[in-house]
Image (cartoon, rainbow, N blue to C red):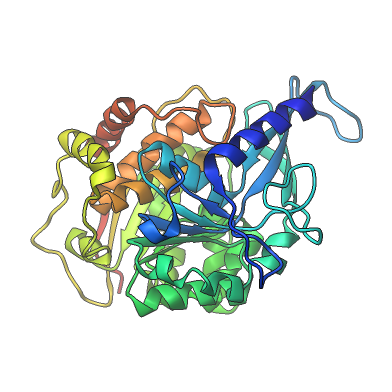
Length: 413
């Protein structure tokens, strides 16, 4: 029964989200995630490169014990950070172009005999949070190469944003970033995990946006510092009771390292404590990061609906600074939610934010949409909700946007 259910899901995504194009001079076929069968030659809003994965979720019905089985539910879910981001974008009206690799096996959609489809097995706790997991995603590093990515130069160089996840190997990450740099395309880096987040070290100068959680932030800062300078914040009762300002000051040194190494905007997710949006400049600087992005006719609905709820320039400030030692940070609260599982929350935050940036919204408005999409994700069984209602997303974004506040706006020296 479970296998049949998984196959139906995979058949569905094969029909609706993938376009297979033979490449006679290459061992893999093109893996592209499009909306409504749109071809590469017609252009796209954003390019997304990274993992397309079969997720196996094991959810216990009671608290689990070590060294024995626990009653619960095992489900097969369409996953992969980049794939989740792209699906979320599609459901918000964007038309992302995705590049990935899959295998010739039960889960495979694009076939090659030497590839095993990437699979991640997560054991969740009774609260829907990952307690432990194992990732088998070697195919992404082996077959999603810099040479493969070079074939999509036109799509990358004409996109308003390139989103890459850290499942890519170092050469593929660098090749993707260099293609984007040629046309001054902003790059969004999603760290994926603590271990893979350290790959930022080779590409930080190309990255416009990075979206780590607390642990990934620490790992990235240590990688960029060349040592174990920073330690994760202890998750104890006193940490949960600390103020937003105190939490930010705990994270500020690591955030500053990322900004000093060239990343323009750092989006730090802190679970139920919300999100910190940080840059070296104020709101005016943030707008220049995606300068030139225009609303797309296909996504005018997203632009108009969110603008009506979240008017732009709310955070404009005459004391914006371009000094090298200046740090600007805004806290966006999380929304109350009936949590089912948390596995897709961060990916939908990125997907909602990138889709909104592509629609012409500013970074502040876009992040509010991302947080609203993240709330919808934690209330769903799948990594990405079956439907994202734009009116509900805009209403939730308004709550987030109106409650956001500046927590730091001065020199760090």
